[in-house]
Length: 207
Image: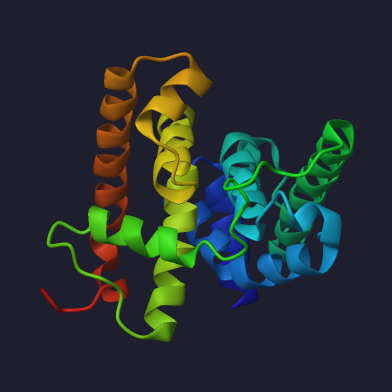
C-alpha cells in the first residue's frame, strides 16, 4: 500500500489530477478528524470543517507541482500543514472581525445535506446516494471534485450549492451579473458531472 501511495504522489506532482484526487480521498477522513480536533469553539461559530477541507484541497491542486515527492508520509504532512495554515488564517480573520455571524446566516456544522443535494444535481437521473456509507463516500468524492474545478467555477458552485446563497447574493459579492453567475453554475455542474461520471457506485439505482 505504501509503495502504491508513493507512486500516486509522484504522479500527482507530475500533473496527474486523478492521482491527486485519489490521494485526497484516501486522506480525507484522517484530515477531517485533524481539523475537528484543532478548530476552536469560537471559530466553529463561523466556519465548518468542510470549508477548511475545501480550501485545503483547492490549495493542494494549485501547488502540488511544487511538492518534492518524498513518499506518502511527506504528502500527508504537507496536506496537514496547509490545513493548519487555513485554520490559522481563519482564526486571525475571526478575531479581526470581532463579531458573530448575522442571524440567519450561521454556518452549518454538517454540510452533508448540501452535498447530497449537489449529488442529485450532478447525477443525470437525479439519483441520491443510498445508505450511510455511500452517502459519506459521495460527500468525500464531491468535496474533492469541487476543489478540482477552475477557481471561478469552484467559488460559484460552493457559494450556490453548498452555502446556499442566492444568485443575486453571489453576483453582488463577486461583482458579476446574475446571468454570468448562472452560466458559471451551469459550467461547474457539467464539470462535476464529467468528473463523477465514473463514480456511479456512490449513487443508488433508484430513479
